[in-house]
Image (cartoon, rainbow, N blue to C red; front, side, top):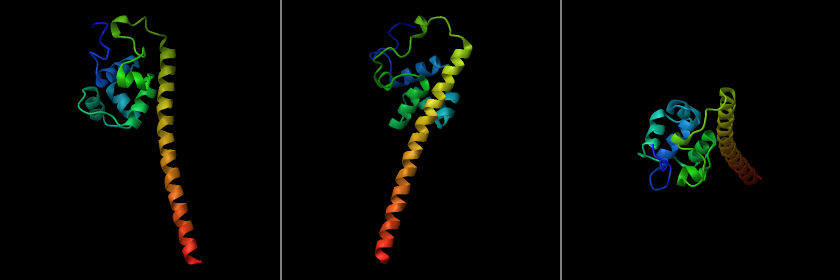
Amino acid sequence: MSETWYTDDHATLGDRLAAGRDAAGMTQSQLAQRLGVRAKTLRDWENDVSEPRANRLQMLAALLGVSLRWLLTGEGDDVTPPAAAEAQPNPALKSALSEIRSLRGELLGMGERLGRLEKTLKAHMASETAGSDAVE
């Protein structure tokens, strides 16, 4: 592969997504499972058939250990092209890094769930307050 594989002129969002996944040492199935999407959905993203929503893009960047900016535009040096890759890191360190990325993705997902739950709770509290005011 050429060294320009990741440039804006040559790479798409799907290309960068696949490259980030490969660099993180994950299969499509593994990444899809961590994101909570079907493998076909991830495959469609990597093949530029469809694009992930904003919340999934944030989770992807976190799980892959790349910046959102790089994932969207290719600007920056988040992933080294395969031909230029250095020697493989210690497997234990790679495993720990993978676990950190996974936990970061889970935390982002939990943050979103907490936000939705808080919104639901506020709506219920507001309706109960409105209901008790009407009774008085």
